[in-house]
Amino acid sequence: MELQTLTYIVVGISFAIYIGIAIWARAGSTKDFYIAGGGVHPIANGMATAADWMSAASFISMAGLIAFMGYGGSVFLMGWTGGFVILAMLLAPYLRKYGKFTVPEFIGDRFYSRTARVVAVVCLIICSVTYVIGQMKGIGVAFSRFLEVDYGTGLLVGMCIVFFYAVLGGMKGITYTQIAQYCVLILAYTIPAIFISLQLTGNPIPQLGLGGTLVGTDTFLLDRLDQVVVDLGFREYTTDLRISSVNMFAYTASLMFGTAGLPHVIIRFFTVPKVRDARSSAGWALIFITILYTTAPAVAAMARLNLVQTIEPEAGNYLAYEERPQWFKNWEKTGLLAFEDKNDDGLMQYSADESKNELVKVDQDIIVLANPEIAQLPNWVIALVAAGGLAAALSTAAGLLLAIASAISHDLLKGIIAPNISEKQELRASRVAMALAIVGAGYLGFNPPDFAAGTVALAFGLAASSIFPALMMGIFSNRVTKEGAIAGMLAGIGITLFYVFQHKGIMFVASTAFLGDTSPNWFLGIEPNAFGVVGAIVNFTVAIAVSTVTAAPPAEVRDMVENIRIPAGAETAVEH
Image 1 (cartoon, helix red, strand yellow):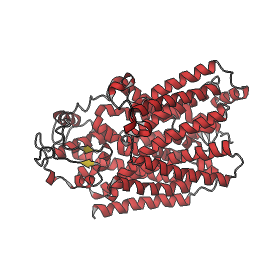
Image 2: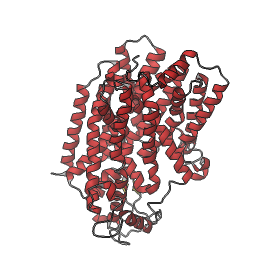
Image 3: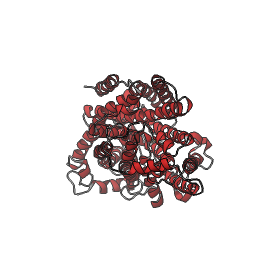
């Protein structure tokens, strides 16, 4: 069957399943909308959390970044995985024991301040909207290829799909939709990896194939990759740092702290019946995530090798543009891959030297989606990958939009502005807020500040500098005051936004970047995407300093903090 037809069928079936689940699990109450009724099984919640967590950045962009960064790209694997462990061990069980709907609600109660709750809402919205921009980039990339249209049209179509099932179902619909999406995305990621690993190394396990030898030779795959990229003028794949050791450390730490402070992931642990289930579902989520995250380095290396060997089948012999394969033509239609014949010889020269490089645009976010086409895998595999990429982007976008809607309707409207509104009015407000968030994020998605994973890294840095320290101090210190928490959050996110905007542009408009995104202007050589760890340090420092000179929290608040940390009775959730 023709690829385009098969892709329509596979993606159409997956979408029919998602929309059917959304209709079946339509939220009928605010409890359904915010926490899926609080009765999701830990294994099911673990799978939904994995889908919520493994966004377009993980599925579409991470392997692409590793493919072009090499060893330096490992910051994403280490940061995101390590952060999830922090979240599972140090935050999720305690927040579940407290039993509230949202992260700002906990911060408002713990720091006995409506102002603290409002500041937390603002921080959450800033982090989540930045994160959604990354998902919108992934949605645009996936839909543009799937529909064979330009990126902008693909993004508009994706926004409509997200609008329908996210606004309709709330957390209840999103949870069960994400379970289906996890199944689709993990199959779509691992099946092509198995095929390509067999092609290149003869080993069906990609994780082992990465360290294996190429078929019919004694040459290790990574040695061959090092050789071909060095010959093209790039740095060695297996040793190439991400700018510097200091920057790699900062990037990893920023992603770890940001992961642990992401509201859309934290609220997933409010959906299980008991506190013990929060730990259990976190463990299951980590298992489900590990399957993809251990496969990603193999996908990255094999995709980079296949790409280079397609353009340059033999050393010094480049492919003629007129003989370019069909996959190249398909991606040219999206505008995410472009060739310019600089020397008019009709050959596609690929080089680290910009004056000689004729592949003038190779968007890193296309690598995973193009990988099965480059490797000439069966059409059904290519169609499955398209469905997987869309599942990954849509699942996380829905979770983020729910976090934004919850913050606006539950924390701002119900919690602060109009506490007497009915449950029906609150539910309606949540859906309106989510619709507006989709429109806003889609608009920003037309001009994203970075690749999908790069944009997501900015969101993680903002979460690391604002929400993560407030949660950690709120749980593990009964001395931090409302004044300290508010000052810390404002200082942390303020200095991080200032640093990002001066290098990336105000609201990511590049023309307003008054220092430019170049390393000589970076503080200690730390790039904007990695600055969240500095913001976190500022947050902790300011909060503790202010708390030492302000009145201690009330006795009932200190008792609440102590109670949250007591394991006894943890099997029964505290309902509010």
